[in-house]
Length: 164
Image 1 (cartoon, one colour):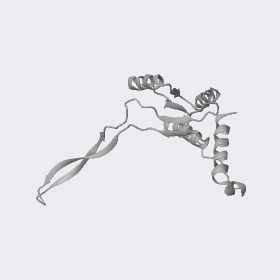
Image 2 (cartoon, helix red, strand yellow):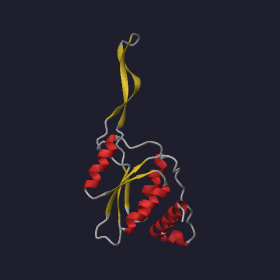
Image 3 (tube, helix red, strand yellow):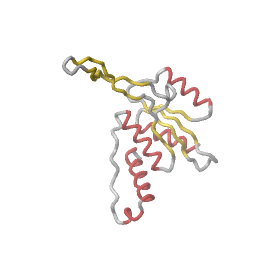
Image 4 (cartoon, helix red, strand yellow):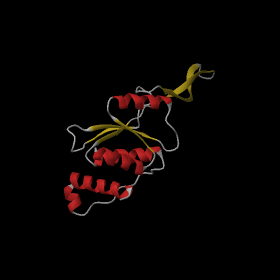
């Protein structure tokens, strides 16, 4: 079964479970498929699928916060000091350097506790040194870490975890 079919079936089961009367009355429609050729789209697919399948998944962002920069300038006509826009500056994020794009847990019925997973989404780029250190730190604890490039890799990883 291809990834689109699996994604659609998870969405339909979630819709049926969360809005049974709407589903029964025929108001179901297929999900909008994310653009999986981008990191944002592939990350959205992964998080949606995990949530729709009764697992846990969340996107992690450690980019920081943009703040507007200003430049003081004296206005000779008004006689006052004004602050003019002068670009954007990024304040450092508060998370760990190299953190994964998705963190979550997969509930496998053969295990007593959910299995912790960390997923790094890579489309065209490679793992940074910080990301490699983070992977080593995470795998030492027994959690599973995967680098995912496309939907097929994600579903192979998912099937592997469910088969443990």
